[in-house]
Length: 201
Image (cartoon, rainbow, N blue to C red; front, side, top):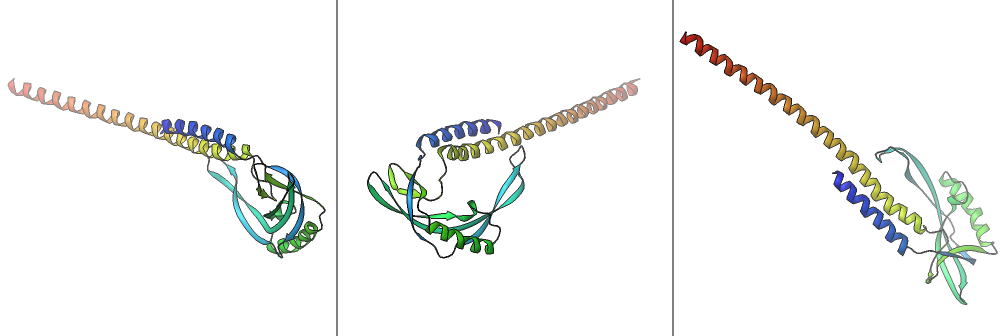
């Protein structure tokens, strides 16, 4: 089990390095707002807030999400592009319920459409790949892939260590039992010999 943990750790580091090498590095560009959805949609997700040293989640927190669809235009190398993307209003203003999402979403929509300029993220090698919200950076992607594998490796290490310790305790117990049984067997043989000698006398 411990050998598997070491292998998983090595694989995770290799995966993280590959992700760093091949992940897209997005750039920013000024864009002009065109449209925004009529109403945002509200949802929640549970996320682990604290983990113990074995990777088990000890407490959770609620993530509030208030998504709205937006449309914008921008120019890269004298070529015009139109982008459609999603925006999480809860990342810009505090939202804790569906009613707050609708209320603050209405004001956010108005501010978005009245913006003179805004920043969007695009792939330099393929500007049609663009987003209103900042995509994960190569470092964050590497942390996600490599960190997840290292977490599994850590769990395997602790589980393997506990199994080895438990196996050692069981082996020691079996040795003690065999020693006791051997001693009892020797006593029985000695007793039988003494009995035979007494009969001969």
